[in-house]
Amino acid sequence: MENLRIPGPTPCPPEVLQAMTKQMINHRGAEFSAMLSSVTADLKTLFQTKNDLLCLTGSGTGGMEAAIVNMLSPGDKVLSVSCGVFGDRFADIARTFGADVTALRFEQGQVVDPQAVKAALQKDAKIKAVLVTHNETSTGVTNDLATIAKIIKEADKLLIVDAISSMGSIDCPVDKWNLDVAVSGSQKGWMAPPGLAMVSVNETAWKAHATAKMPRIYWDFSRARKNLEKGQTPWTPAMTVVYAMNTSLKMMLTEGMQNVFARHARLGAMTRKGVKAMGLKLVAADEKYASNTVTAVWPPEGINPDNLRKTMREKYRVVLTGGQGALEGKIFRIGHLGMCDEASIQDALDALRKSLPEFGYTPQ
Ligand SMILES: Cc1ncc(COP(=O)(O)O)c(C=O)c1O
Image 1 (spheres, rainbow, N blue to C red):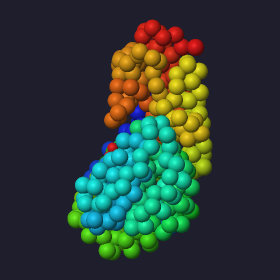
Image 2 (cartoon, rainbow, N blue to C red):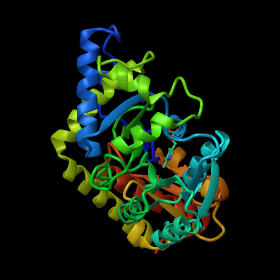
Image 3 (cartoon, helix red, strand yellow):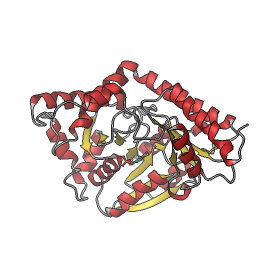
Image 4 (tube, protein in one colour):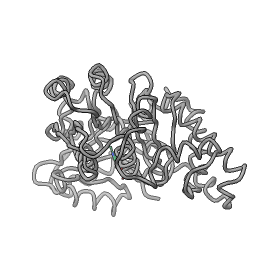
């Protein structure tokens, strides 16, 4: 079996795979309704929210698009705060649907500077909403969302958060931090396959939704909320992913939310220590902000990271991922979220240590 160490999809526990073999049931019947209600309640616990939680059928990007079209009208002024590919994607979606986007961008490996967000908001009083990525998967950094959110809410702006690769793995208390909309995806820390986008929506967001004019049918939050009251989804849901989540969420709650966060912190630290011990550098400019779900690494000078990954995959069955956007062909990334333990990280580090000499680099 491969050691799949990419930042999603992640491997699923055997119990979750087993749950997915269940026969189809009526998605408008009582059994499914009970299951969806239970999944929604467990997600609320792990999102740390008492507000609405909607399960939409789609990948994380679908959840991002849903957040945009349900909150905004064409012409609305939006501040997009980005330190990588996924932050840029959020801005692109908003722009595509007609928002007037001001982009505040930070260099690769850097995190968002909260004070720069404050200054941008002071500069343009007409900004209505701010788009923020909690964990930037493309560079392996986690933004200081608590501080950023405080600034945005003090300025009374709508806060829309991509928490796709952090929620459920890194502490992201939706209600405590006042996140109006927060999005995640089932294939990340949730130990389930791709197919569900989970979105929390608070009262402020519902008010914005009531006047938002961007076109939407499939992603419409009102339809999702109305159907959820009956334990249903507006459209046919990804049934097997709901089966999977129904099991994986129970496993996460049995482990305990704080223990899940602590495990991710341990695995993140172990990965960073391991690659640094080989003399490699993290993409994260300040390790204080290095992500606990994915580690992005610069290969040694002159080594093509994609060739290195190929050797690791073919010789040691360890699968890493490469760089995206401007970092394509320049870095490699190790995922450590969802179903992940010390043994799988050690296996990945061992494969890296054994592969590097083949490219003329002797790890320290
Ligand atoms: C931070 C972040 N945002 C958005 C996405 C996009 O999610 P998806 O690939 O499920 O559409 C990802 C997935 O890699 C991500 O890590």
